[in-house]
Length: 82
Image (cartoon, rainbow, N blue to C red; front, side):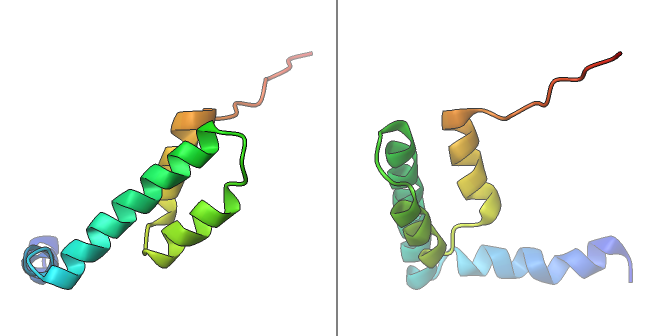
């Protein structure tokens, strides 16, 4: 099968899932938990509880990482050349 044919059912399903009330609720809950994670990361509190809430709301690892990178940045190891 061509890649376009393989992807066609997924695109159709994605379009349908977003119309379901439960899916919309999960998407909203995920956004709320990601906002809470960002607020906790900017504060001085424990970020583990907002992380767990985001996981329970089916936020992806990439979504959670993006929020934390926005707050803390990304570590780049210095390169030492002798």
